[in-house]
Image (cartoon, rainbow, N blue to C red; front, side, top):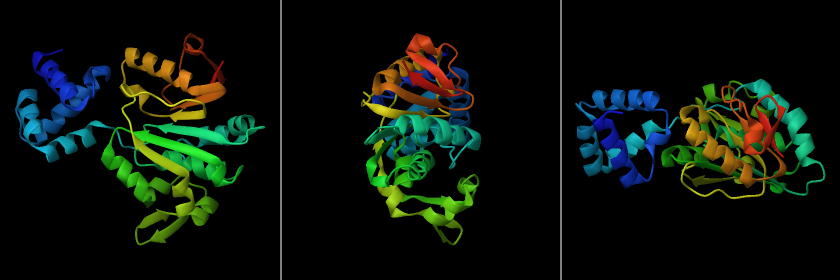
Length: 257
């Protein structure tokens, strides 16, 4: 690790509490170098000085550092498995249902969960918590207004039931929005709540080092009820689930033993 980059990540950790050393170095370094060069800075040191004195620059840096690529029902086949196989088991004999969408970005994922749950239970019976490190993404999630491309995978009947078409945008209805509570959270350093039936954390673990992933699997496991499920992204298979207290229930679905 170059001294320039090392000093930068230490400075960011002191200032924001975010530990960039837990992200894969080559990917993170490439993204940040492209960002500071685009802004006309010549080194990580120069970039950090700018972030230190300019709050807006810091907000933009935090926004760009996080990965806000999301859409409703992303990788549709996996959501079908959740709907037809995983949820029926989890909901059996369960009076209430507690779900966490971790690293939820702009809200498409937790709202997908709410729409899917509504087929089984009244929305008032499901509690969905959604967290992300990025304040701007969370604000967009709370607004619940999306471009058409975010809705490409949504079944037509759900689109009609839960969205109002306004110009080029689609506005989510208030019943679904009320089901989800959004909170800011740093997955790597903040404590987790417990007693979840289902935790969904997709397409973010790939950016972390093995050490950080192992820490998260342990924390996720501790936050689930026995028999609860962790649902991960399509490039994030856990190759040794039993080491973390899980067994494979289906591809990308891990049940707490």
